[in-house]
Amino acid sequence: MRSYLPIALAVVVLVLVSCAKAIPGTPKAEGEIDAGTVAGLAVTNDDTVPSGPKQNAPRVDLTAENADNGDMDQLALGALADLYEYWGARMPADFEGQKFTPLARLVSYDSKGKALRLCQTSTSGLVNAFYCSLDDSIAWDRGVLLPELSKQFGAMSVVTVLAHETGHAVQFKLGGKSGITQATKTIVKEQQADCYAGSFFRWIADGNSKRFQISTGEGINKVLATMFFIRDPAGTDANKQGAHGLAWDRVFAFQMGFSNGPKRCARMDQKEIDDRISEQKFDEDDYRRGNLPVNEEYVRKIKISLDEAFTTSGTQLPQLKGNGSKCPAGKATEPVAYCPEDNTVAYDLAKLTALGTPPKRGQEPGADGVGIGDFAAFAEIASRYTMAIQKSVGLSLDDEKAALRTACLTGAWAHVAEKPAASGENKLRLSPGDLDEAVAEMLMGKSLIAADINGNPVKAGFARVEAFRLGYVNAKECTARFA
Image (cartoon, rainbow, N blue to C red; front, side, top):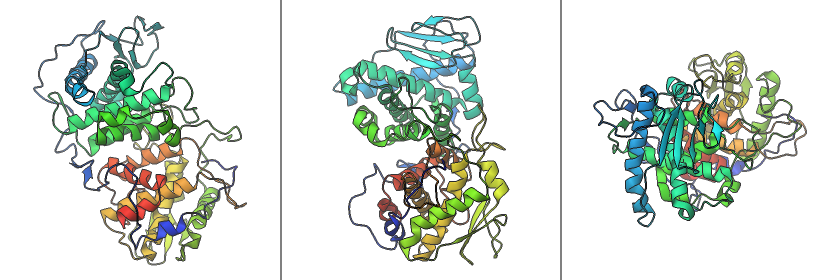
């Protein structure tokens, strides 16, 4: 977050607290959000559906130039064999009979080894994977990128990258049917490619792949976490040549493809992306570049922002206590808890500070001992604060619907926190990259943003992020969907 602009939060309050009655109108979000499913599929985890290559998968007939035929090359070629099968059937079905033709070239290289010249670029130090329209090729770094992804996020992260690059090939082959021209900005192409990758993963999750399988819980969570790893740095301008999007934007595009298929991806255009993209440059006065220290001063300011958001609700607003997240009745969650017995939000400042410390380069946010960033910590406070509002209107606090509602209301608060405001005392405002930190927190095993009062999170990270986004886009839907 940033601390130099005032922030007006006395908005949408009646919407947020009118959960006891239905809100008329048609919800605007795409698709239903169900705590027990992922876009209609049952939630599975790796203990029942191990994510990764299938045993006894059929032989891959593809070959790559310059390959060493090690594990990374075999994984990449297996992914491409599946992608060829998927697009071979899906492209003609969805795009007026147009056939999918295999790539003209597949190239493996080692960014630490002998340099090649590909797509008018040297591969020396090029930790990347890319599609090149000049010769209709896909190339990947088997030396650094693929092993690093596989180590941190599992084999399906490598499949994710190859699915994204094949998405670019699909764009090129579809041309006007994907709305792509020479003048199309990079961010549109990247959003479409993430979306096409999502549609391919739905095909895998549906059990259609001969070579791979993925659980819709832990497996898809890891795929979405990959988006955090390969996102643009916070503060990048979305209109910059080469911009790929922040994790918030990339996850949205992937989810749209997973839920709605390739036709939805082809409809992504500049107007849509201009309306919703979160990627923006840092304000030149934001000297902290989006990460404030999580200390008593800023916890106090977060309390002010939350009070401003809910002040006209007519409910008794909770107090915050820095007492190690302990409740009088003894039952609590860490590092923040809502205590209904005395209407307080109790927090452990040391643990929130650890969560609010940004990860170092190459670290996985939220992994053991690794922080995420200030907004992850502040959003956990906000999530427990919304419990008081829900309790005041007689809503349940200890079930999956409460967990979804909490994520939704926290997202609604995040949207309010974007806008400049009248209060001179509160100077916090959402900063570029904050929504990415919320995504990273919600993909952790024990997300509080999307958890009930007992700390039980919604099973699937996919649904957690959807519910948060729902509130961020339109607070009224928190009541329409989860009352």
